[in-house]
Image (cartoon, rainbow, N blue to C red; front, side, top):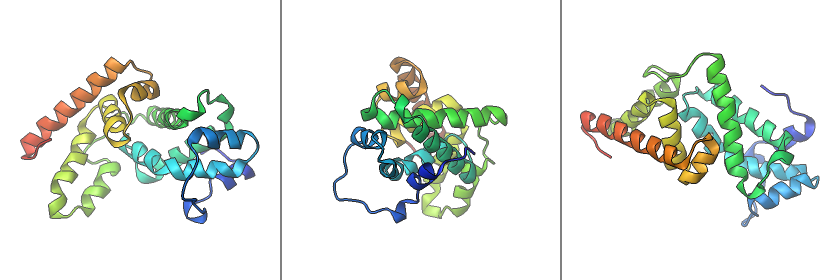
Length: 200
């Protein structure tokens, strides 16, 4: 994992040690603060986005420890490369793109392109499932059966809440390609859930 300097480590402090004002400025304003030398303000961005980043890394098939490492790497890279964020108001999309590249590099290096039903990213959740959560657990398993591109597009659109244009920006694809991936993901998930006895 990337080493962080003292300022970066302070900026990446756990969220529970930070005080949250009732109204916080937008990402672009916070990025401007950091670039002016207020490195502590980066902790606001960490607190605001780290949970969604972690969920996305898990959705890409990483176990919890590796997902946490990838999120930390992405945040450190974002902090060190903040001057390269061309549109600070779209910091979130830029940050997700950094995380995506970290995850893809990791998956490529260890030759783990697909998630199996036995993958730790799904297995630990399935072990904790209660009977009334069976459909939710099956949805998690069904997501794991999707190809990485379909799963990523579906999670960015429906889990992270990005627009098709934003997903296209993050994944370096055209909006039409993203729409097709999300559509195919939904169709495959629906088919699996119907076979299981549920529905979407």
